[in-house]
Length: 162
Ligand SMILES: [Zn+2]
Picture 1: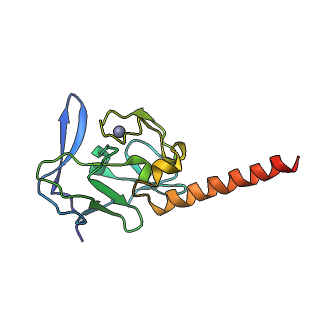
Picture 2: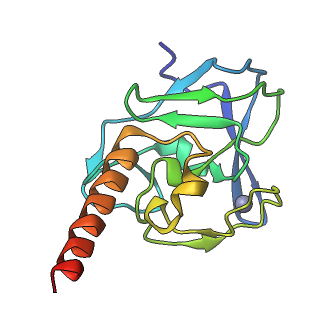
């Protein structure tokens, strides 16, 4: 188990932090574990969501940027960061924020340039299912989406009853 992140580095350019890798990885390879010593019930810019009301302070991994065409995934069930394609040494690392975040406290506009760019990154609850289904999603996100849709169904039933 890789717990120490000496293979990762933070590059700062114009106050913009980027997480980069000091070594190459193959698709599917585990890169490090996600820190879980410091869990809180509200998100902030240093946390990753790991459950309905659970957000873990991720330390160095907070420098991971969002991309709509990412090269890593954060698997919050196994608590591991995994390469989702082959990654070269010194490459910028990124993941798809809505794969862990349901409702972000600081939404932003994505300028990643990917053909499938979602543009507004605010959390999974603000994305259509047709977009989400093309991405790796963690279990808590899938469960919260099901809960939201079930709520919608019961509201629709009430409307029909009137
Ligand atoms: Zn994008």
